[in-house]
Amino acid sequence: MKTTPDAIKPTASFDLADIQQANDRQNQGAWFDVLHPVTSENTGMRVKIAGPDSEQHRQARIKLQNKLAKFKAGSVTGREEASIDFLANCILDWEITEKGQALPFSHANACRILSAGTWIRAQIDAFAGDRSPYFEAH
Image 1 (cartoon, helix red, strand yellow):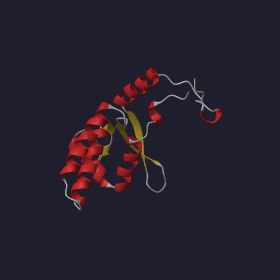
Image 2: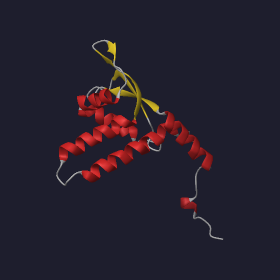
Image 3: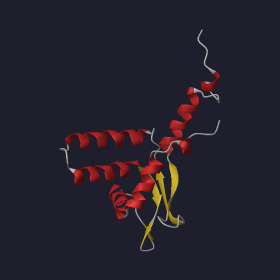
Image 4: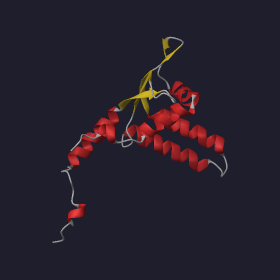
């Protein structure tokens, strides 16, 4: 029987059920507070995003890959639109206002939000790929 050297022995017990529970939480999504790009203050905008291992994220990823496969080399505009569409498909809900009124949840509005500022898209993109909100510390 092979033994694992001390340097790479697991530091915590991890079970297959832990992974499934994390996947279930990712399907439910997690709330993310959009921060001001300079001051890092909370903007009051909140977005609920499906986790990177969720079914929603998987479907969005497949749709993105199919779109990207159709583009010719050098088609930057189409790739940017596909990237925005991908992230929009990972958004499950939000608390965002426009002119003092709640912004209705829709794919088209999600694309508008992601196109409003690259700093918003960058924050949402980073959170969409983060697994840490879905795993409990061991």
